[in-house]
Length: 120
Image 1 (cartoon, rainbow, N blue to C red):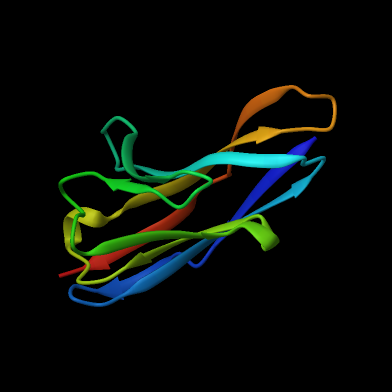
Image 2 (image 1 turned 45 degrees about the horizontal axis):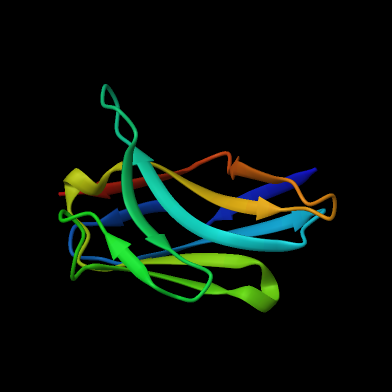
């Protein structure tokens, strides 16, 4: 069993910054791609950013230049540094990871979500 636990969400004024963390624990042999998604009220969940095991990252156009995804493989943790936040960034943010366990199976695991609210 693998779990992802997110932290770092909260309320911030427009133009401010937040840093989200997502720590994986459990039966982990290796973690491949990791990512962040978000879901605003009444909208579908959308991709924010992804990062490969080798550190290659990609971003949604709406966050390019403002958000930075990173990971610490030794700690099985990924981060999302969010700068210049806008009210339209308000959403529940979810992390995910493609995890290989010691039985050589791979699964996509999701975190429980953390609320980010940006006030104008």
